[in-house]
Image (cartoon, rainbow, N blue to C red; front, side, top):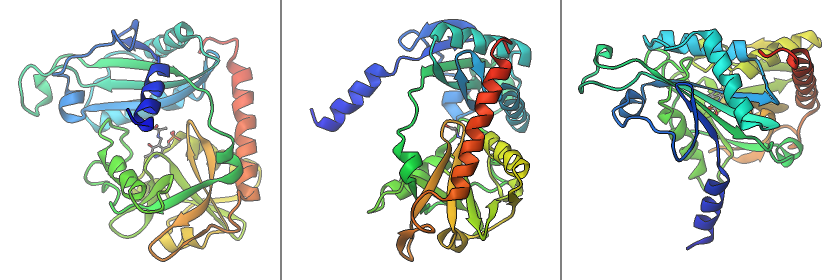
Length: 316
Ligand code: PDD
């Protein structure tokens, strides 16, 4: 067996999430769902990725609100109330007992009673909560930064599968990621443009650039997931007096930026210090994590700590 396969098996053995299916808590061997579930048949599901510190789920209300918006966008009924779902999440993370947890919360449309697209042909939806121990990202992502590349595929158009819906169909993102991974100098994340050549977001994160001390991220109208980390950075940036704007920009603006970074729930902020492009492979700015990026990261970490302390003795 090759080393790669061995590594993969080691990782699989360490991957021991606690899973709740419709409120029944079990392990990965026993967590089962019908092969006729529309989540599997059509990618007909929605999801959220959240982080919990002890039993405090960071920005739970914001994630649940986005989940409900995704459901609305797909004419999907969530089979449980927000309050009940919050309790089920807390119950599952307590059963897992991790210091830091990665939570993947999924709602599927349910089991089809016959083949056909109509949503009347299926049962009540399922909710699935997967909780895995999170050991944190290697510190070199923060100290060195990551390399970005431009994807060969464009982001889904807002009039097709609107990227604001966080659906289980992540194939647009997967293809974007593969297109940079497969290139000679594989990048860590791929930047997707839309059909007008505007920068949208990366395959699993939002994108930011800094030029002349101003911070820019594309507006949601360009066709992106309204990242919860993105929204929080906008608020924190304004609070500390940074000039921070939602404005469209193109590929050249990323290449010529003074600093750049990506944001998502699990990573918070990863500085982006290099870019692989057809024009040339080069540093972004001076090629090291920039001061404004690191200031925002520090503010964000402070905000997480305050949040945890505020909600620690409060079950929700
Ligand atoms: N991804 N854009 C896309 C396409 C994403 O998949 C994500 C998050 C984000 C950032 O959103 P937030 O700040 O709310 O995490 C932006 C999650 C983490 C994932 O699918 O793993």
